[in-house]
Image (tube, rainbow, N blue to C red; front, side, top):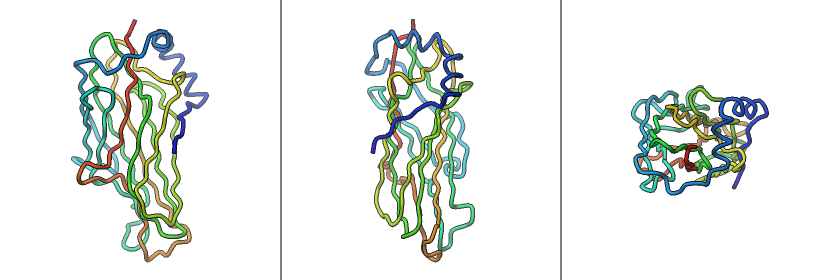
Length: 217
């Protein structure tokens, strides 16, 4: 499934005002791949019911073209012994991405992966958005999974080139990721558990964010 990310009119206007000089210059500059040497990334803060302390990890790809986020305790569920608050889990990760002088980046696409086990009559959603510190965020994109289902899932969100939002050149701004998982019991048997997860104990289920690199003017 492929779904394009679109900025809302208000968000697009705000971003145009705050990053006009950056995006104008970036639009005229060629894409630079792979990523430049010297890129580093680390988690600054983590908050949310879906990512208790120590359960989220981030890793930069060797070619600097992407980074992955892996969760080890990110599951939303309903039915059976589930708690009333278990139907919704969320996670906000604030990251420090160090970029060598003379370069800037945007997120060009994102690959979300997980697993779902949904009883007949239930349904689930995966939601996500991201933004640079101090800037308007992207519109929240949601993906729907109807029950019955018992399978691995993957959603790929691609940003059109004209809508890429680049970090302002020369500024240190952390990158924020907001994700959420929800399950609705619907008409399913309340004694049976339905769940959706981005949980991975072996590192095989990851969310991958792909960079678009450009040189600063």
